[in-house]
Amino acid sequence: MTETRALGSPIGYANQHRFGRVMRIPTPTPLPVGDINSYLIEDGTRRGELTLIDTGVKSPAAFDALRKGFKEYGYSLEQVRRILVTHAHMDHYGQALRLREISGATVYASEAEAERMKTHWSPSAQRDERILAAFHRWGVPPELARSDGGMREISKQLQDPMDVDVVLAEGDRVEIGDFTLEVLETPGHCEGHIVFYERDTGALFSGDHLLTDISPVPLLSFPKREGEPRPKSLARFMQSLRKVEALECAITFPSHGDVILDHRKLVAGYRLHHERRALQLARMLSGAPRTAFDLATQMFPRHYATQLFLVLSEVIGHLDILVDEGSVRMEEKAGVEYAHLVRPCG
Image (tube, rainbow, N blue to C red):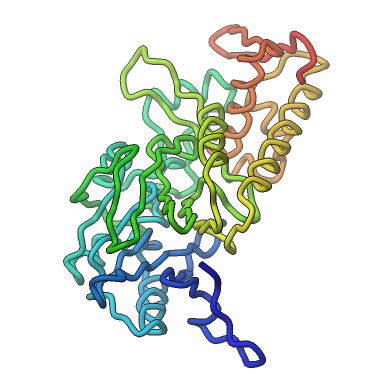
């Protein structure tokens, strides 16, 4: 499966974004991550029937870009028969409801993400009592803990809640004619994240699990019921990396950025990034015990106030790893947790 380019002539939209029967359609978002890639797959046995992976946000600009992208390939939105959602973040399913209303397509997602798609849920906008209590334990000032940076309103603008039609789980297969997508569960970036793998061609649709230019943030996740342990998102992300690293991938289609031709090299880079981040945290703890928020303000001085959930996800994830390996222990004092360096990490 190779990219089609017209040599010696200006590269048109379709030539730039077509990879055999897979077509990429970038659409804009107002989010820091920038454009998101949706992928259109042709059914080789039923001419004109299409499968779409992820949809972009709900906005006039995103809808217009998606519609124009379809037109560049000679198709229309009405020809979509399936919409596959990698996870329930607004840039991945925001306009799925509208597209289903237009085309009658069947919408697929994992069980955990299907539940979230029923609401205006956004990870950065979560501020219920349990989460505020966790922020307090991590040392976040109350006034900052309560602020979601406007994400609640943004989530209402950029996604339509919906019920999915089909729930997917590990090992399920989606048949697109002679092109069979296998579902792999890859928790980490979020609890119910899934990717799609086509073994015959070695094509992997990686969602936000593998990205070209940035390391995905394993976002904080909280238990559904009181008393249950908090899922350790970074640890789960690293486990999911091992799963996809074992795949034979000729090409990986990420949700952001260009295609990936060596996914194992990328995974190795992610590991190095997280090892360096852990060492950085350990050095910051060499003087005295510190709260997660204190560490976040030093590690991300320009972003902690406006992207609190993201920076806490990064710091808590690495503290989880350091605690599990015995380099750090957490001690509570007056309801606030402090990280103590026990021994050098690595």
